[in-house]
Image (cartoon, rainbow over all chains, first blue to last red; front, side, top):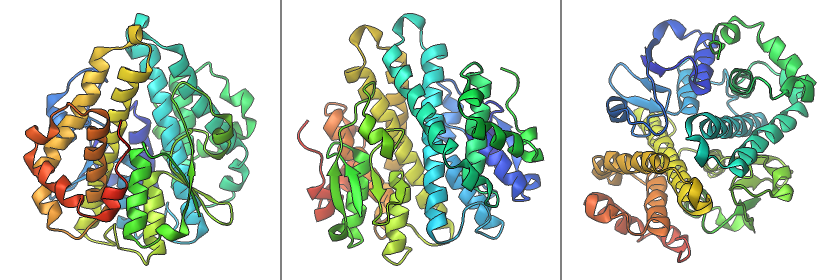
Length: 205
Length: 205
C-alpha cells in the first residue's frame, strides 16, 4: 500500500500514528506530495480531485480517501475494533469526538491559510477569529473530558487530539493552549511517551 | 432523537434523505438552527463548538457529530449495511466516494463564503477558483463512474452526489454542470424520482 503524505499534515500524521499502533506501518510506502491552496497540482488532482492528503492507494489500485476512512480500513485490516470501538455507546462517542477533532483541524488550517497564505490585504479578521475560536472552544470541550479519555485504551479520538495539539504547537506556537488547558498538556505529555506519537511530530516550523 | 437542521444545509439534507430511506424519519425531531461564518452563536456553540450542522441529539443526551457519523448511526439503528455496505471492496469504495463528495461540499461552501459572505474588497479570486475547481474536477470524476453507481442499490455515496448537485443548483445556478456532465444530469433526474430526494430540495435561493 502507498500513502500520500506530507510531514506537515496533521491528517497524514494521524494515519501514520494509527498504522504504527496497529502494527501495519511496514506494509505502507510513504509517497511525499506537496499541495498548496490556491495553486494547482495537476498530477495529484488525477489521484484526488480535491488535492487532499493523505490518500491510501491499495496494491490493486483502489484508492481509499479521507484520513478517517483510511484509519477505519487499517483498523479492519488489523482485525477490527482496535482504534475504533466495534459497538456500543463508546463507538459513537469516539467517532463523534474524532469528527469534532477533524473539524478543529479544518478550522486551524483555515486560520493558517488566512494568516499565512492569503495575500495580506485580503485577510478578514472576523473569519480567522471565528475559526480560531472554534478550535479553541473545541479544546475547552476536550479539557473537560480528557481524564475520561485517558482512562480508555488508545483510540482514534485520542490520536486525533494528540494531532490537534501537535498542530497547535507547529503552527500556532504562541497560542498558549498549555496554560489555558493544563489537562490537555498532561494528556499530550503522556501521549508523547508513545514512539508513534513522538516520531511523527511535525518538523520545526 | 433531535437533529439540528437548516433547509439550506446540504449536510443536513443528506441525513434527512438517509433517515427517510431508512424508515427512521418519524423518530427524529427537527430543530432549526441558524449559523453564519464570522458570527458567533453562543447557544449553539455549547452543543457543537464548531457550530456545524447537523448534530443528532439522542434521547439520553448523547450527541452524535458529523453528518456521516449520523448516517452510520442511523444505518446501524436500521439493522446495518443498508446505505453503507457492511464489508468488501464496495464498502471502501462507497466510503471513499462519500468522503470525496463531502470534500466537494466543503469546497463549494468555501466558495460561497468567499463570494457572498466575505466583505467584497477582501475576496481572493485564486482561492475561490481553486475550491470551485476541486468541486468541478470532483464532478468530472463522478461523471465517469455514475453509470456504475446507478447500477447499485441506493447508498450514501449516491445520496451524497444528489446533495452535491442539488447544492450546485441552489448556490451556483449558472455553473452549467448539466451541460458539462450529462450523465450526472440523468442521475440527478433519476434520484429526484425518490420522494426523499424531492421533498428535501433546498428552498429557492
